[in-house]
Length: 296
Image (cartoon, rainbow, N blue to C red; front, side, top):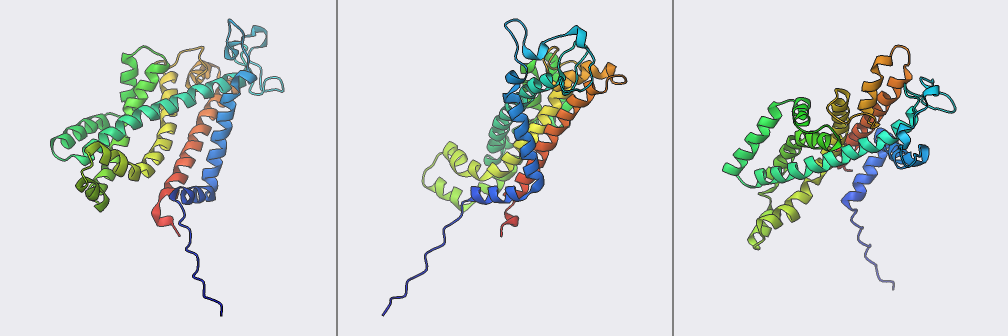
């Protein structure tokens, strides 16, 4: 007589696998990921697209006999008023924009998560002090705060990243504080506290890992905002300065030629729009993927 075998227990699917599966189902999110991957590839191959020499970087190679050329086979996006290839400058500019986005998100996320975690975990004076400082920062429009900080520093890449990074801190702080407030009284936190775990251990090992979903979504959206703010600062002249091929600075240089040479304005503006569109679509896809109400 054959013995009845018990059915094998179903394997528990990991949360990361579920998130990736839901993210891949979103066509707009995958489109954003594809555009972002193409821009990253463009940035990595910038030196191949526009190689320079010992004295002149590839993005600043001038040819005054070939100025204001429209898009063609030789120059896909045309040339500017100095005969520089616009496609090459956009490729090198992708490096600058992506670097700004990554560094700004790192600065604002590190500071915002730390402040939000402390504010949410500790009640009383610490919470009130931190949140009043955050409220003061929120009372000032982001772009005005970034302009004020950048104006007080020397124009350049570092100033832009510091200015935009500081202005983005309040968003992370408020999101993390709200998540920590809902988690600090949970049973697993009480169990860790009863076992003698210290405050730092509880926050970093038990609370923050459960706050990662909104932080990741905010970081994706924040990178798009950082690139837009950096381009805005360069456009008004207090960010990166020419001849650095930053997209906002390229727009500022070419705006006086917009009537006669449309390509000089169109392609840098299109690059800014594409990267912001891609990151926003990815942020929307991540927000939906992390939403537990969408689980089946």
